[in-house]
Image (cartoon, rainbow, N blue to C red; front, side, top):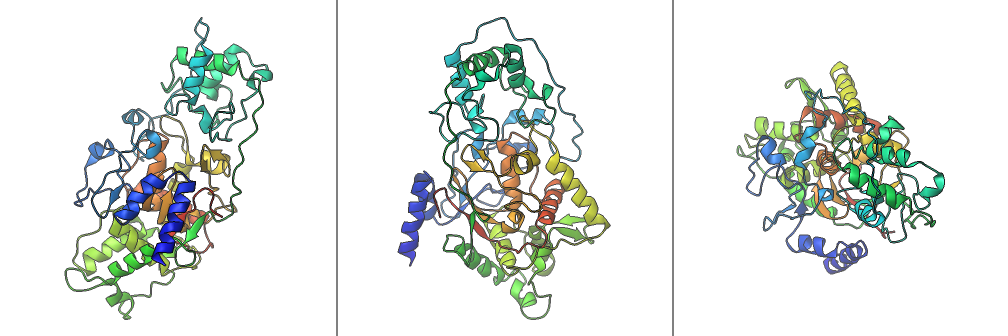
Length: 446
């Protein structure tokens, strides 16, 4: 059975081009993504922690740190600190729209193509189809393969690349010039390249996404089943005072946990704030087990929360009501729609405006009532694979990773900003079944 699973899992990784990364993860047990603490459980403080490579894919065995490349691996760009974040004490407005005149020069189309294809400069393939050699081109934006036929002037094209907000204030296109991603000369090179676009290129063939593009632990054959077992071990493990979770919750000394995870995040009166399920577990560890809380994002925190959510499997998501919860929900909604960071993107830009489209090889889930993946928030922790293997991560770690990728300076796990946003996202999944823990399906999986 184990051998069969191992071979099938490696075959999936091979199809997705992830064989080398994930083979190491299998050999040294389970990978854990973006741990807040280091391998010894210490938590770097303040901005110093954010400046480290994130995610540092730390493994339970060996303490290996994954040395990823570029922003797509979750590394926090120091330049992102210059731009608004979702922090509640960050009142910085967006930079005003710039409308500079194009420089008096002829751009070089070859240089422009290089810039357009560069994932750290023009990034055009993330959202647009260009030429036939543009692998995994996205379809968030229009097909640009015949762009010159649209009859746009040089001034218009320059402005669109420099700061597209001048043409559409609600655009999802980053203000490349205003936010210092491209210089005026570089934009002119891209303009020259776009002027050569005359040959139609069809959209790449994409796999048809089902409503559920993940495996459910305990129901589907996947690596995620292991997390239920590991979480149960922690659930029955005694704390410093000799008490375990099951001593209370399975012996009638505390409420049955069936369905309880479906009510989080929720307002905790004793703390006078909204807390996540992971926070509640840590509160129990401190108050009832006389034990040190698990660092948020650590393997034990994710595994135990995964098991507690498994105990609520198929219970309908039902965040609690109340004045305090409603206020937190409203804050989370504002954060979800707030454009932030160097790329000037909001969560809603990808998961509402561009939902179900492709951002390079990433399919954008629909996080909205009635969306194709309305249960998204109910599926975390998830063994998440997107370009590389991140291991079992919480929903807040996924939010944090997205912010790093879109060059928004991220918040602390367990912060009010993340707890409120998680509450908002869970509310969007109201009445849907709790399905955590899960595991991402790889491209090519049935």
